[in-house]
Image 1 (spheres, rainbow, N blue to C red):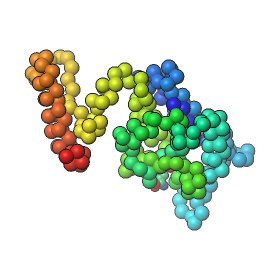
Image 2: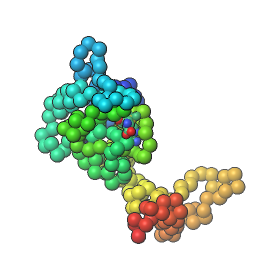
Image 3: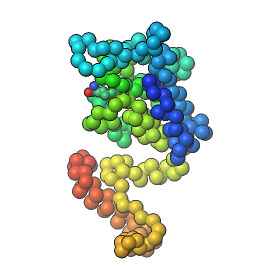
Image 4: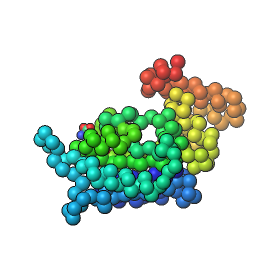
Amino acid sequence: MIIDIITIFPGMFENISEYGVIREAFSNGNCILNVYNLRDFSIGKHRKVDDRPYGGGPGMVMMPEPLDRALDHIKKKNAIKASDLQKTIMLTPKGKKLCQPCLKNLSGYENLILICGRYEGIDERFIELSVDMEISIGDYVLTGGEIPALVLIDGIVRLIPGVVGSEKSLILESFEEGLLDWPQYTRPPSYRGLEVPPVLLGGNHQQIDKWRKKKSVDITKKRRPDLFDKKT
Ligand SMILES: C[S@@+](CC[C@H](N)C(=O)[O-])C[C@H]1O[C@@H](n2cnc3c(N)ncnc32)[C@H](O)[C@@H]1O
C-alpha cells in the first residue's frame, strides 16, 4: 500500500514509521509513506495556501488550487491503474466517524491519499470535486488533520496482511466480534494483593475460552451497552 499525506506540517509524520509493528510494515516494503508539503504546490513566492473566508468570520480557509496541484502530482506519480484502488480522504470533524470495519475496508486499497486540514478547514469546492471520502476520528475538534491522519495510518497498517505477527491476535481484539476485549494478566501471579484469576493458571483452554468470552460480554454490557445491543 502507498499512503500519501498532504500537510503544511510534514515534520509531524517523521517518526510514525520508526516504532513497533508499524515500523516492520514500512521497512519490509509492505507499506510506503510519502509526505508532501502543501506549500511546495502553492502559487506565488509567499507560498500561500490559505485565505480569508468569503462572507467574513474568524480564521482562514485552505485554498483549493494548491491542494489540487498536490493531488494531481501524487496521482500522476503513483499511476495506480484502477481508480477504485485509490481513495482520496479528507480528515474532518464533519466526516463519517472512524470505526474498525471502516479501517478494515481501507486496508484493502492500493493507495490512500490523506488530506490534512488546518485553520477553519478547506474550500468546499475542492472537497466536492476531488475528495472521495471524509473521515472524522471523533466528536471533538483538533487543530489540524495530522493527528487524525496518524490515527488512520496506525489503524490501517496493522491490518495489512503480514504486518501483525499473528493473524489470530487481530481477530481477538476489541470490536472484532462486536465486543470489547477481556482483561489481560501477566507475571507476577500476585500483585499488591490482587491475584490472577485461578482459571487462567489452570491450563484448561476450554475453561479459559469460556471465562474470557464471559468477561468480554460483561465488560461490553457494562461499558458499551450500545455495542452490546447491536450484537444481540
Ligand atoms: C480547527 S479544525 C476545523 C474545524 C471546522 N471549522 C469545523 O468546525 O468542523 C482544522 C482541521 O483539523 C482537522 N480535524 C479537527 N478535528 C478533527 C476530527 N475530529 N477528525 C478529523 N479531523 C479533524 C480537520 O482536517 C480540520 O480541517
